[in-house]
Image: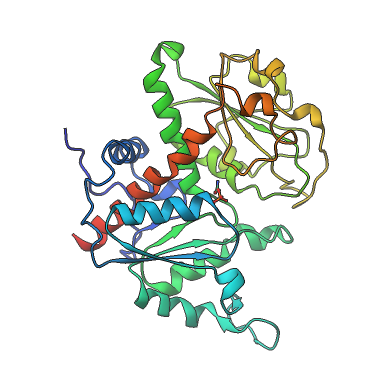
Length: 340
Ligand code: CP
């Protein structure tokens, strides 16, 4: 049956669609089905984006997001142009009424409208500074692009969220459940997000976003486990069970999502790098033979052990490969909204 393919995104009063959080999606399961349709038939809408151009702006590094979004756009017939603004562009100023006497060369309110003329869809990656929580959590950078570009904006990971990653994660969980239904008959799957050690202070984006999407999805029994002082922002985690006891959390889990993040309350710090928090086969025995997920890149034998990453429990490659179908479903929704 052909899926009803229009109107899966919430369109704001401006009439310009965007994809920056779970709140931009009306029906997550329908978007997942659309993505899986593209996985089964990547070129089913290969002329949808003919003569349409997508700009991929990177203020920060990327491998999966950059490549998968380009492939997704090309599968829809779009021309994709990558611009590494962070390393190759003029240094952008984002603050309103800034006196630009420092190192910033061009204001976003001058640059973004031009990109709005060059492109039909604008995709942006802007990591947080991890210096000032209020600044990062205001999402100033991506919001300024939304305000001034005048065309649909897609987040390729912003200061607090990574929505294409989270959509991919739910696509992957759905696929696994479709193939292993007996594991979770008559109950919701148990999904555990566990903090893991790392050598650097990392953003909370992936953990925030995964929490926001799993809570919005409402189809899982969701537990978050982390050391004391690593609480995430409640606006994303509310609804989940939260515990500092990792072993308790892992009991009976069907999926374990492993991710490091720095502190939220005393912002951007590393308090604890206890290697005991790294997932091992011994800990995995507490679970329901759980599938293990990670957004990648991963620091082997710091965040996650070789024995897990190289085992049949790991679904990280399947997960990363699904980034294409998540991006394709979102871009198709935007194209259909904008041009049909
Ligand atoms: N997971 C993810 O976003 O990977 P990249 O940083 O390589 O794009």
